[in-house]
Every structure is written in C-alpha cells, then in structure tokens.
Length: 271
Image 1 (cartoon, rainbow, N blue to C red):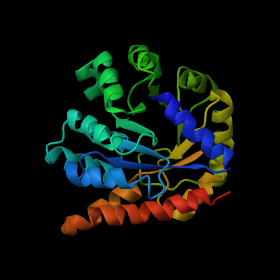
Image 2 (tube, rainbow, N blue to C red):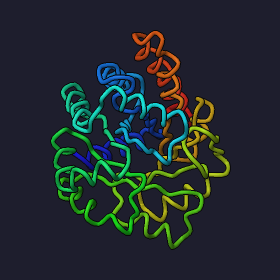
Image 3 (cartoon, rainbow, N blue to C red):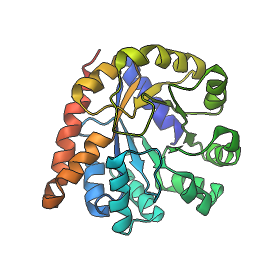
Image 4 (cartoon, rainbow, N blue to C red):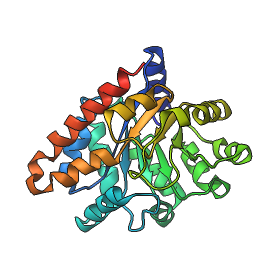
C-alpha cells in the first residue's frame, strides 16, 4: 500500500480529532526475536505508526540511547535483510499500521536505490527516513521510491529557513518530520509552546501532516506536543526500556509496551 497506508492513517485520526502516536524502535535490538515481539505488540499498545530503525555503525543524529541500540543490534548480527524480514513478518499479522524505516544513507547506497525500494515494497514498508540524505542529492532515491509508491520523509529543523524549507518539502510524501530541538535524539526536551509556530509554518509550506520528534520522553510532553502537531514521535524513552530490562530479557516486550500505552493514551487524549 505504501504512501496510501500513511495517508489513510492520518486521515482517520484527523476525522477523530486526534494526533498520531509514532513509536520508534531499533530493529534487532537486543536481538531479532525480541525486537519482533515488541514490534507486533505496538499497534495494540496504541502506536498509530511505527518507525523501525535499521542499524548503522555511525548514527550521527542519535543521542547515546539510540547509538547504543544500534550497537546492540549490530553486535547481535542484524543485517538489512533481517530488517526487511521483520517488516514482512509484521505484515502477516497487521495490514493497516504504517511502518517507516529510519536510518542512514550508507546501507541504502550499498544496495542501490532500485533494489532498496523494491525490497521495501516487497516486505510491506511504507516509507523511509534517511537522516543524512540531502534533498539536493535525493532525486535518484526519490525516483526509485516513487516508482514503488513509497514515501521519502524528510526532516525539517528549527534552523530551516523559508528557502531551505521549500527545498525540504519538495517531493516529500506521507508526512514531514519536524526535529523539535537542535542536537541529537533523546537529550533535550521539546517545548510545545516554542514549536507551535514552526509546526504550523512547516504544515502550511508542505501541505502534509507534521510529526514532531527528538525531544519527547514523557506522557506529559507527548500530550503537549500532540496539541500542536499532527503526531508525536517517541524513540529514546522506549529504547531506554529495552536497555533497562536487558538483565531480564524476557521482560523487554512487556516493559516497552507498557510505556508505549501510557504515551499513546497521552497523545490520543490531548485534544
């Protein structure tokens, strides 16, 4: 379904007067089986969309929490083909929840744009966020994704001026990811009052829903963001539950999903 699955989910939530809760986990953290147990439980816990990270050895935009998640995943032997297989397994039990892959350009370049896009489509992913892909150099990847009706979702930041924003929103599909803080993931906190104006500006410029992430760790913060944005993205707070439960690995899915439920409730009841 690709982009249409993303569009349908945002349209349904808008009709209900709700923002979306977007949950991020790193694929293969701490291993593929545990990762899948978390992944398949997220929709019932309230996740409207899922961002599934694919590990890379130099995750430059990530704070320590997600850096360590990538390291755990790589140490466990996770490959890109395993990430696609996680999506494929998920699609056997859930045909409705959009899945957005998130990572870095190197693994995409290694596979080649056409191969990457076709493997995404075959697995059942709907879009991808490639953090270090400049929009000026993205036409080849965008063409390949468009050919499979998949979304390339771009990041806008507090430092994106009008000219830059025009470049960022061009050929973006699904939604726009607004980075609420200057810096890396999971370190600073998003200020809902400070982002309200920029979010409205990005939404108007792009004509798409705006998801806010990079600074949301608590239900209270998620709810505040949900009042001004179309979606709140939470990653580090969920990944922390994985790290904290490593001594009792069997408890990881329950701990992560319990945290996700609290965040989802805060987002869905914010308006």
